[in-house]
Image 1 (spheres, rainbow, N blue to C red):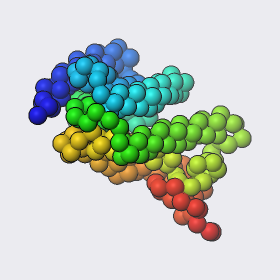
Image 2 (cartoon, rainbow, N blue to C red; image 1 turned 180 degrees about the horizontal axis):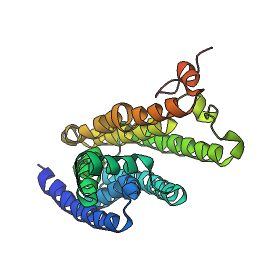
Image 3 (cartoon, rainbow, N blue to C red; image 1 turned 180 degrees about the vertical axis):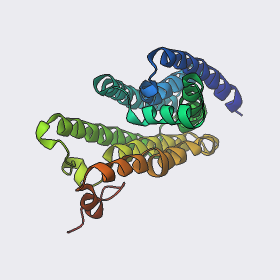
Image 4 (cartoon, rainbow, N blue to C red; image 1 turned 90 degrees about the vertical axis):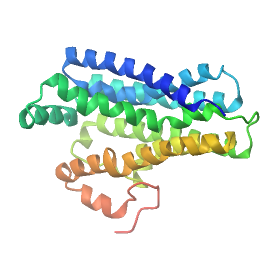
Length: 267
């Protein structure tokens, strides 16, 4: 049986060292917002560490690593650019302020426990498909794997287009205070999150083709990312803020699907 524990412990050790280094950088900047860009880039590191662990062999390992790299570098670069352009994320600023005011924590402790130490295990679990999926014994990409590749590519494109449309919309001063309701945003209120979920379910489908064992081991990944996006850090966070700041958002909610793209409802 492939050594799942050895692979995961290796990757956990690498990720822990990198998260500690990033936390130290954060102590100098006093702003943990850049960690969002590491969400995708860190998973790319996990994918390549796994690829080297298996010796860089096998079509499933190659497919998983390449797809994860395209997704993670694109998303990580976009989020890093957004942070550099717009400055500190208000969510993190509020979180740090509350931790220091209500709990009496110093900045170092607050940023470590509430941001870096939290994202590390989440990143490890979500990226399970691109880690243990590379331990599959199948030597050929079957129809199921190609279906997973297609779904992952679709997700990357869908998420990328959604992000591009949002950036272009916000760049137009005439749209200040308005809600984007065209393009992909006409069919789902969160095309970026939907595309993200498609990517990780697609990667998991590739694992199914690689073997039953790796499919079972990697299943928590897509389940967790879908839960995070729809129930915790994704949709609820954005929608709460939009409802407070955009009067027209409620009408948009009533006619537009919250996650899966669907034709808009009639008024």
